[in-house]
Length: 411
Image 1 (cartoon, one colour):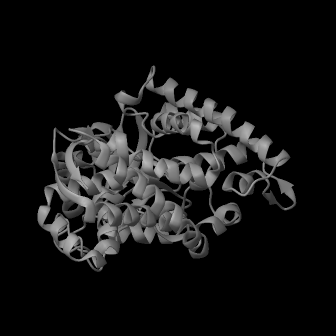
Image 2 (cartoon, helix red, strand yellow):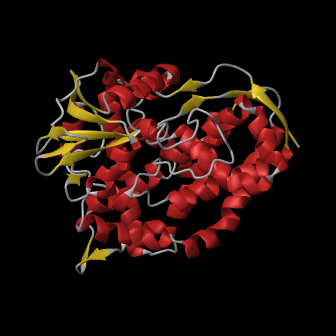
């Protein structure tokens, strides 16, 4: 067996600020892929974990979902936050393993199948046009993230759920506080308190939604969740809230991060933007490359169900492994010139949506949103440039740009 490795570079994965400095982050991850692809990370704020940085290992671990389980530690959060989550009893799809996961995932499955996506295409395209029109109407410099990128996918996913438009700003605020608990800009108090308060407000809001949809069912995803049964029994309050929670958060932040990161990539790679404008048929591969390039979900965790090994390194039962999607999506063994933004990249076997039974439920919707937005924008975008310094969110889970000052001419 290989001797377990402890490499200081792996500490970036337990440092939220590292994700605000991509040069530092990618330098460390490139070193790890070459030198210590399975490395033990010990940090005072987090329980120890193994850092997995090679694409091949991420795929293999994700594929073997009976040996490497999501429960009880699906994401990397501080030890004190883990205790709070356990106390709150939140249990979303990412906390579950089969057979429970398969049954619960199926509740919303039909809403994200190809037939449903075809039905949604007109609405998504309409919203894309609305937000490109907003860009045309803006005079001078503005923040593309806060004024465009966070709002467009928010409207898509909240419309799908059936949340009234007047509540969209509240949903955005709570989503940012839940997923941005490491980001000082999203704090209203001590960051641990923010997350707890946001969870409590989500509980209160969506419990009311459940009660309403059970009394007066409507044709939306919230009604499907509220009125679902398993073995003839309705979901409990905590189960319905957990379901709304994963749809509302995962369906929003990840797509907004991709759209914002895609815009920055096109600004910084004008040749690729020109290539895409001249060949609109590349929009599907361009959207896929934006998803790889930004990798909004930075990592997921797995826990070994029994003693095993990864790449010859022994991993004991109960030990956790962090699957670094950011690292996997820059793996030199998988991607030709991985640090080049290539709108025509093919193949593009990225792991930004995960892999295996936990492959992202909303992947098709996310792809549609990104493709629809840029299909609408690019023919109308006469010029665009940075109007300030881009800023990234501090995180260890989901994130991307929090500010992207731009100056754009849209017709």
